Picture 1 (cartoon, rainbow, N blue to C red):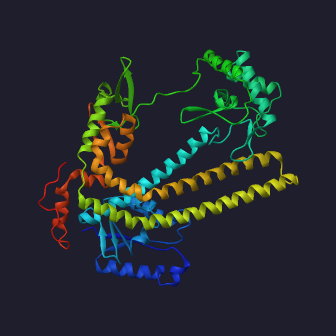
Picture 2 (picture 1 turned 180 degrees about the vertical axis):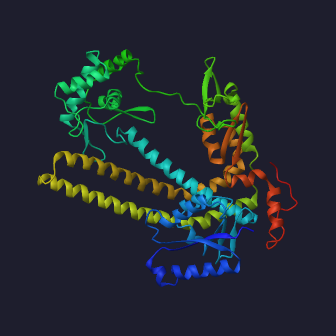
Picture 3 (picture 1 turned 120 degrees about the horizontal axis):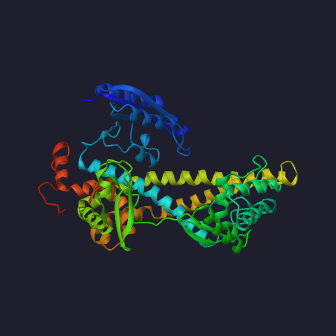
Length: 503
């Protein structure tokens, strides 16, 4: 038996200190438990913070400590909500080699836990990841909607000022620099280096602390469609609401001029469905794709390691899709599993709601703070206590931050509304996954596969993978559940023991 352990105690408010949940009381309980169960406490970690604060210093220190000291496999904590302050913490402790002892709940979570416990914990981890992924998708969706309305969701380039989240105006002084750079490069057949020198000779100042523009910055400037009233988002070009600095004729003459320097006009890449998903099973290099005979897509190792034999072998894209379909076919659920999923989601919903409310409060406070800063700074500018340059710089920075907070508020709201439906969808997904998966296109299959699978490797013409939690339980079928039930003498025989489960 590995008897090395860490103990963790936390209080989340002053009220808990007053109600008998103090850290000393928790530590006393945990030390008594460790002594009774013959655990050697090698480190203590405590946090006295609220759920509204971002991050927990000693919780993160504990995670780092466990990663460094792999011989320590046990965490002892009072109960679940002492360890998991919010559901992001589920992800940090997703390690099947750890034993988590929940003293007041009289429960131990580990690789040897009974099927119900393990399954429920897997559901919670999965829901945590799905919520975070969904939150990211909501933010991106909001950015895409703004792009379609002509609003650039990103920091504006040199030559413009942002008055607020929707209004972008030309900085007349800097716009002269931009326009002259385009004129020199497009009309006088100068190199980038010579354009920089010519601008300096003509008295154009890039920035007060940096009179000359850098070569890479000039390169990006001359390729940026923002200057003709457009902008790029997710490799698509949108018409912006802002006023252009240069006309399109001058911009395209500049594009043509890049050919004299043997440079591409615009950096582009072809998207393939399964790039970025796999690594080479032999050398660990990335997998790349190419088109053969004008229409067939093949994947192979990039061959960064010269001795890798896989760089000469390739696999057709449709073959990958077929093997992924086979992976989905192995996943199945039954009525009992569906009930476990629903039960786990209901328990987890309380954690999610606490996190949701705390994030709304935190973001709304930040919005109020930024609005006050912007208003006060505007007054200072009118009173001439700050310079125009400082006002412009900070105004853009704070308005960008303000817009980010507003997008996050909307994203959290959308994620919260769909939370329960998302959980139920997991049940429906695993019941109909194979047939639904077959009807998707390859880009959609790639996205779905990455929800269910991890450690994707390509070995010549074969793929390999592992299932994420809790799909690993579905995929391995009832035999694994039977083994857990037999090991769990306290629970008795598993209700499905002796039955067959199709895979």
